[in-house]
Image 1 (cartoon, rainbow, N blue to C red):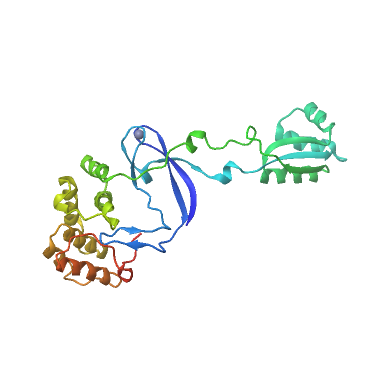
Image 2 (image 1 turned 180 degrees about the vertical axis):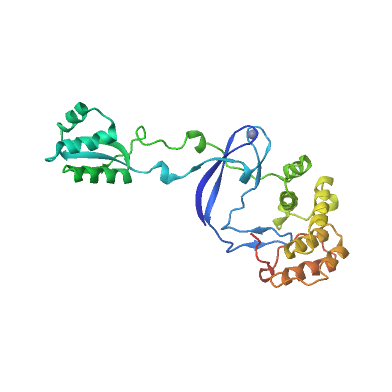
Length: 303
Ligand SMILES: [Zn+2]
């Protein structure tokens, strides 16, 4: 996993700043999967698509929020140079003209400056421009060079505002918050609605991913949580293999075993058969508990 720069976003309601870590590259190596479709990937951080604003409490779609900036370390510490004229050479007027072009100083000021050579004639110049300026002065016959400036935080070009660096990272919503977001109607598309329902389902199953926590049937969960899983099962299409697998699993967990088995009547494409067989076998035995998929039976993570 290679992390990318942090992206700073603003809450669309109140403008409060938040940030999230971007990713240059990652992979699902070492990932393990569960029957409910959740894949835990140690090398692929699970970043929330929706969060709650730390200031106003409103829901914020992370990737749709206004991007305020990027915290790129390279830009903060981009080196700057000072330009030194050691000797003006035989064509003083030419050298003066080139310095005046850049600095807009008066003829007298530039003349006075060069009289003190070796002297620093420019500061805080980025590398490309520094090279051009040195070349231009040398073309005019001067002896000139550039020297990397020691970073003095008071003098470096502006870094990102301190409030960017202190912006808190976006956090995942809890099951209760996800259910509240659904009730509030924050979904803007079918994908949003599906994402919220799946996230709420997974969040509700989270405690049972630890072996020591006994399964609590959906019949004993909150009515909102149960209703969410029912709505999701109804919403998922049987045409898409991933959705079909999740639909069957939702029905199995809801103890609708016959309906779950019926979803598998048509075969699934390669890569899904083993997970399907595993879930189907559980449905046939009347088992509703969440299970970890055996290593050889994990479907390809759908990220
Ligand atoms: Zn806000």
